[in-house]
Length: 134
Ligand SMILES: CC(C)(COP(=O)(O)OP(=O)(O)OC[C@H]1O[C@@H](n2cnc3c(N)ncnc32)[C@H](O)[C@@H]1OP(=O)(O)O)[C@@H](O)C(=O)NCCC(=O)NCCS
Image 1: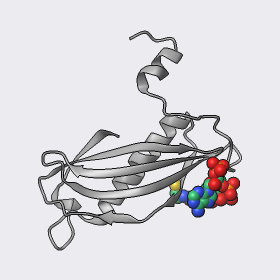
Image 2 (image 1 turned 90 degrees about the vertical axis):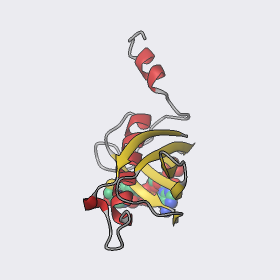
Image 3 (image 1 turned 180 degrees about the horizontal axis):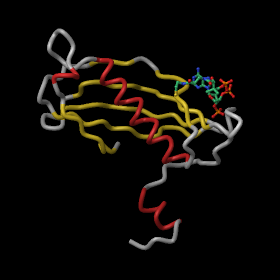
Image 4 (image 1 turned 30 degrees about the vertical axis):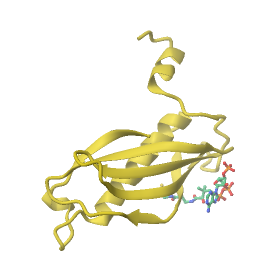
């Protein structure tokens, strides 16, 4: 799993208890996972279909730097299934896990459309496909 995205926990992200608000974290995760799905499926019309149980493992506090890790676990016909972990960048302590997030690839008509993808594509492979040499 690659932890590409870092976030700096700021006052506006906190709950009244002074720790990271779950809703802020879920917003970041949904956006990050959607971007991952868009890049993997090569289509901007992708929607969140399903999010499994979310386990808030430990709290995060103001000033913490956290990182979001996402990877694809399954490519369906019109869907892609992802798994996610959020951890403290410095201590590596787990903050949250989401076992399963399903995104659906949509066609121009807004209905599920086959995406034709079967495996994870890495950025360097995408550049090579586009004819750009590294
Ligand atoms: C996404 C949507 C178009 C799918 O419609 P649908 O009638 O469920 O479509 P299908 O039954 O053809 O299923 C599409 C894919 O989702 C998968 N899927 C459907 N329900 C699922 C569920 N509860 N859990 C996991 N996967 C599911 C199907 O297995 C299928 O994947 P596959 O083609 O890879 O096998 C429709 O449910 C929708 O518009 N939902 C709202 C999406 C939304 O607004 N999200 C929040 C904002 S982004």
